[in-house]
Length: 188
Image 1 (cartoon, rainbow, N blue to C red):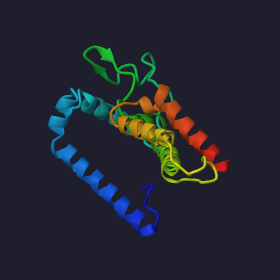
Image 2: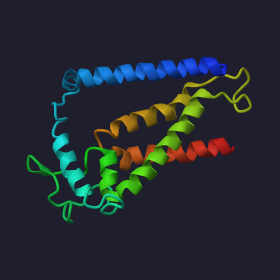
Image 3: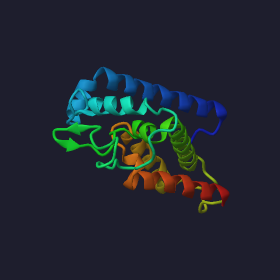
């Protein structure tokens, strides 16, 4: 993408990236048992399907604005106290950030989170692929550091499908810092 200097060459690169991603996704779906085995997970994603069913059932009761934001679920408060118990352990999140946001903030929250993620990703992509000759040293070179926000965002976005870490701790920090800091770079 960095070397594609015409609209036609960028279109070809983007089409190639989309094709490769589609093939990888298709292979991951076809060989999901093998992939999950390599990751040390069972066919039901180590109980996640059961957790998601319970959480979706509760989210459907208040689909638009949810039950209220609590980040990690508070295990002594309804409806979280007995929502999901696996092997005697009360679960404190949905093991999927998007389902967790739907439960807590409803579809409104999912849309807001999606907008934040897309904006942060677009800004990180722009930083990684666009060379601003006025802001780089002589010679106009990219640095590996310009890829870091994009790589971190890709990692937490992928992880958000199987964990709710995007909403707490380092995941939330990376998302917010990337969104805010990269916007400041655009304005500078």
